[in-house]
Image 1: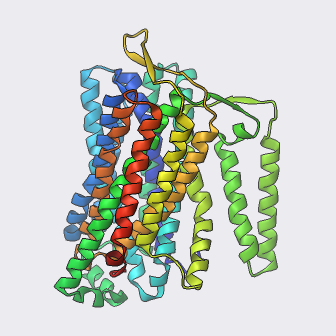
Image 2: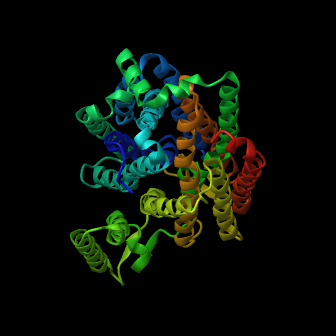
Length: 513
């Protein structure tokens, strides 16, 4: 899985892991913070939440255009500095008045713009590592590893957000609303780690940073000169194909990023707030890490070519199993907090990435691996299945309810105790869809984009994501306005329509692969 990859991949992946850890720590509690701290309605909180997500994924277009002119590495560094300023503002507890709201919105703008300079350009640099002919067949697997690294950061984020908030409340004596800001401050520390990794290992990927004649010469030597000779017609075909893919992924992200909005509302108001036995073990992030070790060690056990390698793998498996056995408490019960459900998606991504790579590797060896556009279409179908499960599990549930709290603000009421297994299963299915669509989509863009427009086309991928994120607000608008099963059916429907469109355009898309 990791063999034969360029060294720069691991450095860039780790730098991204640090940044994503901070981002997802903040995002895990952000929607609940908006409602608790400012007394916002679900719809208005959803509007701010989706607008922020839109900015985070729209600004990479601007960042990509700037990077095509000034260099990718320069924009990555500038982006981290701007993000740090935004998170620093967000981490200051200013209360819930209008001035505090304005400062919070300014912080979101800085975070969005900084992320726009950082995120897309870092991924272009990853793609350019594979311009070297010796790595060209490793592109898809490389992006799968990169995507897995993102989710390692995201895996620990919900637990970090909850624990630091609880520490601020119980040990430092901060109010519940002010304690949220300590979760946001985690992002500042993670960015320091991210930029440190970036510069310590810069030598392994410096040739991809762009912005100098020397970098351009290296790029030509690594095999990109031939790609510059695209005809106007071929360039047009590639851009059109990419735009068709962009149009489809809008609806995936509209549905997928309900994890931080309507699905979190569901976890908060309709899902049981306690668990016991095996189910309780699922909410401890270290148990999930143990499962990940078992999965990877099993692959190593069967793939290792030496007895020593197999023995080490067996020991790791044994230790992880013992840890899980000792963690089991048949009679113990734990409290389940709504944001913790967001750890399951990154857990599944990290645990299932080697499985998906093995499956597609086997299919590739047989000459039957689906093309990237076909994988994207399958991902849309899988996402539709996830929301079919939510719709089925929500039949007969009451409408969401609110009451006026002691501070005069509306407070969401917990009205049902649906088993946590529903959301755990839904996140599993959504992750299957994500693994089919997201890393493959990014790889497709890096491969198909005309060389002169790489930054802009990668920015286009993020603009499509931005539009989808803006449409996330639909979940907030539907929350409390229609029965829950209708809310989930909307996302089911748009995913199916997008999948049908993708299959209709398949010949045109596969032509440029």
